[in-house]
Length: 218
Image 1 (spheres, helix red, strand yellow):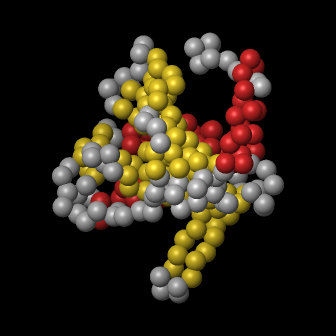
Image 2 (cartoon, rainbow, N blue to C red):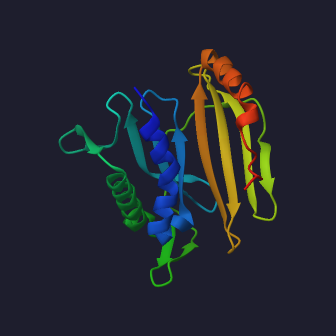
């Protein structure tokens, strides 16, 4: 069992999607849950009120070393799994889900696009809010700034919490980047671990601190 393929895709996917789709570059985000039995990457857009609207979940089977997406047929009452063999298939699946979501008539009042210049305008909407499953976390610390570059408008923060249902720890990293158009892009990555893993992680990092470079070093 290995997560090498999961780590590689996680590192490349956001940049790949932003490079091929201008709309996704403007509003698309992803979060990573590496602590689940089948790690997953969730894709979402944020409304003006910073509420998340999820449009795709990408699962990873570490035993078979493969990504997949799940779908459900209401008529047949059956769930199905589509295997994504390479990164091109993964990008296509997420890209298609993104456009299906944005073109869905249920969201036409909430999101309006000018397809000529790709600019997005948020509108007020009376549409019913959609609920998505989220983790219940008791946050033990506030966001702590680990790195900031005021010249490049980049900030990286961390906060630590505990998941009451499982007792696992969760470390959330948030990347914030302000674009030249003064748009704030925020990505969150969650790392979940047990108490047994925590001491090992701390020891591994501490013993290799001298080998790690600062983000300020080019």
